[in-house]
Image (cartoon, rainbow, N blue to C red):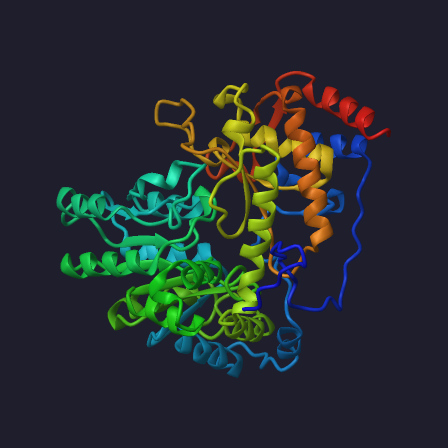
Length: 479
């Protein structure tokens, strides 16, 4: 990995690629942005992309493809069954994950659905470092539930702990005793999404594997954000510093039983899959793939996407490719921290995470701090982020709000998409908003779906705070 410094000694995150294809952007006037967020029910998922300037909603399916990926799509073996494209992807996955079997799916949540349908029974408990929204939903749909046992530092947004995504081993031991016979698998998510993209360590993976083996329970690894996590292992874990990215990846794979991934993240194209060695489990899941995804050699993906994923997986073993995201996120996080903006530290993968609970401490949690911040930030910048807090939870059984342990506005940085000037623009607007944070107030439900409400729910402001925010913005920027 190239480490570039300026003449003044400052580290500079430098794009290790050339930009050859561009897509035109438009920054609409602040009044139009206010109209757009109101039409979207203050839900950034419901914004039309034509109204968005910089799309930091997610890195899922929004990463830039390389020239080699684009070229590979022209060689796709387009057919319904038995296409060579599948076998090329399978070969690449065997190199990085060392597993005998590969089952394709159209994305990560499809893998979760297949695994949960086969492995989870009513009354089961699945220990994990932290849930992802679709993971929890699929497990609960099968009658199971989750047990979150992350390291104690996981919810400390201002911390210097390097691997906050780790499972607490003492809590896992306790779970095996307390829920003996009820644990179908243990799940670990690399680059833990909902707590700020925080990584897991190779050492923690080895310790979990040993415990799972001792208790005869499969160890399931969500590798969707693995490429960022590999960067953190390489740069922050002593045992990994002299190893190549491929060697680290192989070692991770050797210490887990089942790997699933969204190629929309890991692979930079649209698809996913499950890799495993257990022939019996492979056979059970295999028969469901044609039912829910597509035939076994395409699994809901186009052959062109399969070719792109094969190249993307190979490129993910290149430190220059996987380093840009974490380095840009670190730059953004540190610049905001200098300005007094509350951000999740240490900076993780996936994106820069604003601590909405600290940012908007004057707003009642039941009026959705992270959702309010996402709405306010879009209005004054045109940048679309994602609420990762109470809106993303489900109501308690008694109908009360389940207040999230952590309230974040996630500003995802898809790989090889944004330039440094765009990052600096985003930083500038966040700093302005933080200085004017007292103008922001809360949101309340207007339309609330029962399942995965953060995708389709609609909210409204509790008063006219959005109009007042627009007026202050126009005044300060002489508009």
